[in-house]
Amino acid sequence: MELRQLQYTLQIAADKNFSRAAEKLHIAQPSLSQQLSKLEKELGVMLFQRNTSTVELTHAGASFVEHAQKIMDAVEQLRQEMSDISQLRKGKVVIGSMPITGSHLLPWVLPTFKKEYPDIEITLLEDSSMNLEKLTASGKTDLSLLSLPLAEPSLSWVPIGEERIDLAVPPQHPLAVRAQSHPDEAVFLKDLKDEAFIVLKKGQGFRKLTFDLCREAGFEPNVVFESNNIETVQSLVATGMGVTLVPRFIARAKRSEFIPVFLPLAEPVPSRTLVIAYRNGRYLSKAAEAFIDTFKQVMDRLAAEGAKNKV
Image 1 (cartoon, rainbow, N blue to C red):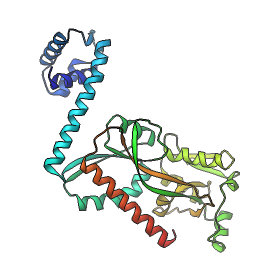
Image 2 (tube, rainbow, N blue to C red; image 1 turned 120 degrees about the vertical axis):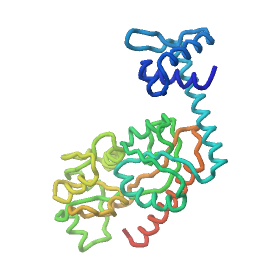
Image 3 (cartoon, rainbow, N blue to C red; image 1 turned 60 degrees about the vertical axis):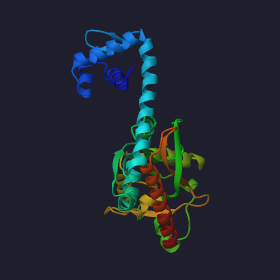
């Protein structure tokens, strides 16, 4: 049994087609069929049931693929570890990020990281928090920027910072007017039960957090608009269409011409815990560890600057 035969079997199982698998493996289809037949003869079992247009895993094949994937993962981890030993600061890290969080935090983190580690390649993958958890669990990303709680049990995580949640209201809203004369007066979430809310669409973690906070305050938010984009949400708030909750780091980045008024919420101040997540048991390269350390340092600096400026 050879490693390439494991790789070939995994590709056939993924594509369920010899021609597509051979094309992706950059080998001739007869050679692929020959290697599979050789492997099946050695094992004494059929791994695939061949049909006219597709192939399906047999019971033995499904078990083989499960173990073969673990072996190939272990081989890849061994390669990464050896690469770290030989190259030290060189490497590659695939980072998953939620669009609304990554767009406001990564511009602070990545320049700092690239300055310190210029030879480490960073690949970014943006998706919803729900999909990112699945991608990270399947090994499609090395690390992902997420917020607690995580739904995927196969993930481990490292906390990188606590982010307060603010209330965003239209400039003409009574709470905004009150804030002009009482800037330090916080808003109680329970007092927002009759407000119209603008929220992110399903699949994004901050939407769930918004609903959870409102429910803890004793009411179900009256949602009048939904959007995939936090900038759109804030712009709609600014034009008077409703109110919303906003992570503080995002509230600080006031880049739109339609800017709502951001108000602090009363004690206990709601917040979310930002984490870097990775698959349980996955080897973290020195490059990945360096990225986590850099992110934590930048978050600490931003939090200190926010406290100093009383943002």
